[in-house]
Amino acid sequence: MRLKRKNLWTALLILALLTPLGIWVPRFFGAEGAWGEWSWRELERLTGYAPAGLKRLNGLWKAPAAGYGKGYLGYLASALAGVLIVAALSFAVGKLIAGRRDLNAGKRTRKK
Amino acid sequence: MHIPDGYLGPETYGSFWAAMLALLYVAGRKLKKTLKASDAPLLALGAAASFVVMMFNVPIAGGTSGHATGAMLLAAVLGPWAAFVCMSIALAVQALVFGDGGITSYGANCFNMAFAGVFSAWALYRLLAGRAARAGKGKNKRTLFAAGCGAYFGINVAAFLTALELGIQPILERGAGGRPLYNPFPLKVTIPALMAGHLTLFGFVEVAFTVLGLAYILKSHPELVYTGENR
Image (cartoon, rainbow over all chains, first blue to last red; front, side):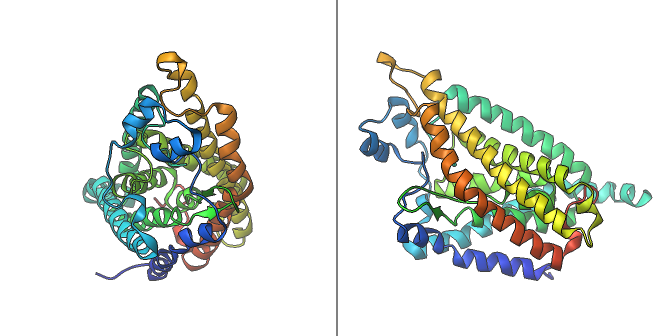
């Protein structure tokens, strides 16, 4: 299969390879993570208490690569794996939605 | 802007899940009429780009971090409905695989970033670009200016909605003794906390990503820019 728009895919790959900057830069400037995205433990440490409902729901889902893996390499691997998964899913959804149209609606576009 | 599990109570997350399912259904119906199977690689590219750009955390020195979302760029290329679906997929993978954003709060996160973020950016973009986005040659400056404004507007709308949803929790959901059950911060904390970063920095990161990305696409693949007829 020939890959169309190769330059755009290359640009995406370069961005993915640069993602470790996404944790290095905040560290360099001594910044924390995003506001309001703390786990209940972090929240408890910050404010002195974690609400009961928040605590209960907070650990609902154990993500296999929570926090995009460990360290710079983990982050990079997460970026590459994430790109593959997201691209594959979107491709499949795109085909799924368009599928029927290409079979019986192709004529419709040509008629115009 | 990715609300984790536990910050929204059932009334809020339930409503947003219902709204998102309805909106995704509408998106599917709309796209079924226009999307071509040959567009699928472009959807893949767009969704992956949104996923990657959200990994570039930008810090406010000594404060918190944030990131661009790619909402405007996706809308400018894929059209708003496809952009909405693509971002929803990226957000689903972030939540399920990487624990970025919760499962219960997925509906709200989708609504804020993928729906409101995309459509508010798109509305301003279309208003400012007028027919420039369709005309192509010679109108690129206006298109890029419109996309820049749309990008800034869209991400800030998304951030504001996030702040609202978080901030109403202490009003909506209280347990014994009147203590908040979910997000404990009131509106007067959530709005400044989220908006300060997005209005001053992350909004402009979104603008930079959008304008650079769209300028490159206008140069290398001008036919990809969404006109309302090509996708």
